[in-house]
Image 1 (cartoon, rainbow, N blue to C red):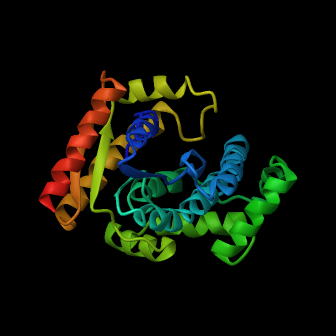
Image 2: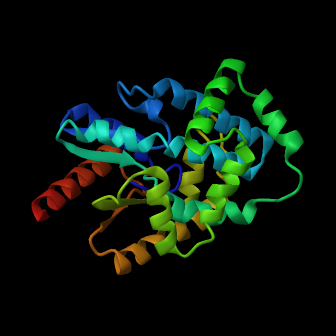
Length: 259
């Protein structure tokens, strides 16, 4: 399931999980996955993401995005081992097609030293230690700016090269289907403003408008170049969580029947 922030993916995924017949993954917030062994690290990465928002540097936001997506492959294998349909909130090969080019246009290349130090200091020391260890394991170094720059470099490549590079980076294959949760930007922004965890660096009307167009363009490209990936649009405007959840379930049933 993909779509701009505020469309309701997390809420729908939680409702579907309650039925118990579908395995669920949160690609960015693994702490929201029931019983996830990665919950503790994911919580620390969420704190690092909030610190990047506070500092306001795109390279640091991209670095945390990279570290969060590095958790996905193990979570996917764990979910698939149950033998059920796996439904994910975001995907490391789909969402970056949209967000990396947008983040790259926001990035600046001036001296990052003071901001990197500030970013580390804004994190709890124990959490920062865990983030540093995960950064070293995933990236082979402990420079978050370099890790963010590496991911942003992928974002300037043609989409076919991006897809291949992301697959190698994160060790995952493309999904069987992409469900695009669509919602007018003004409704999405209104929803993000009610969150208790605050607003993120990219949750502005301008950015979300660009992201919504980016999803449409990326999914049009996928439909033309990867016909093996089913694309389905889920209209979320003015609809209840139950109605959207029921539509998602129907789509999953239809796709299972097609297979």
